[in-house]
Image (tube, rainbow, N blue to C red; front, side, top):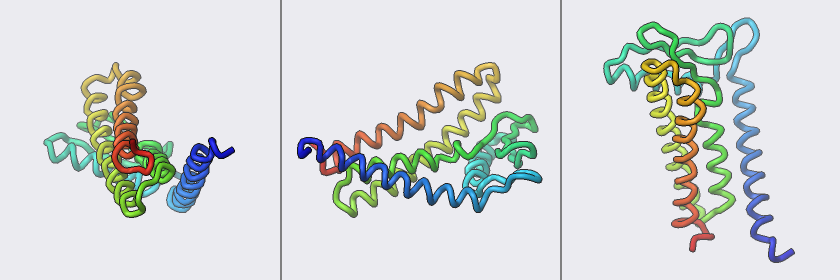
Length: 178
């Protein structure tokens, strides 16, 4: 059993952190989303859509957002054309939870772990906004490439960035660094 101690400890820390953060997030979604007679996305999802719009408007594009009336999403309209949508899974919170759970499971010094979790979460959030910005414009310009862009290219950006942050964490900051 002693030879599996580190693996078991990693799994326990990972799953406890993940389920704790996921439970908090699920409670937030339950209290902030409205379903039924119309829809209203959680404020974080709406904020991501609004920040995407602000970024694109800053660069001179005519982009607006509006709550989708028939589903739990925020529509992004480029030149009044429904181009993309932001759903709960696009707000980066789920991947940030996964990121933090990994950082805690491969913990380093407490302050370093907390700071890296905060900075890494901010970077993932920012990369996600940029990812949605680029996806929106690519879908506007190349609508026939939706499957490749949405299902392959843009998930690779967010998951690749998260994986890179994990590698940096393990190699530079965690107690497991070599």
